[in-house]
Image 1 (tube, rainbow, N blue to C red):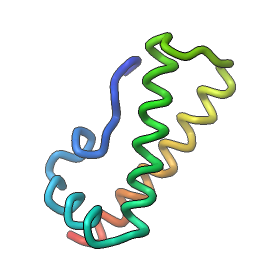
Image 2: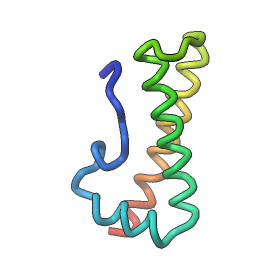
Image 3: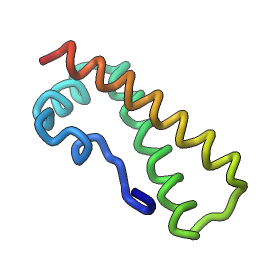
Image 4: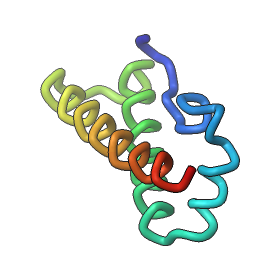
Length: 80
């Protein structure tokens, strides 16, 4: 959905505890988590017209966010 934030806890509420455990105990997960959220905030600012950029740039950022989300989710599922 346009203009919707996609933070991981809202995307995967059933994994809230696992996400917290990984954020505090796995430096690699924590770094990817932070990178994901920075991208999500940037995309949200662009979609809400706080920042302007090209459509190509926005699409590239969305692809990066999706790839990070996939990688993070694999780590979450592996921890469950």
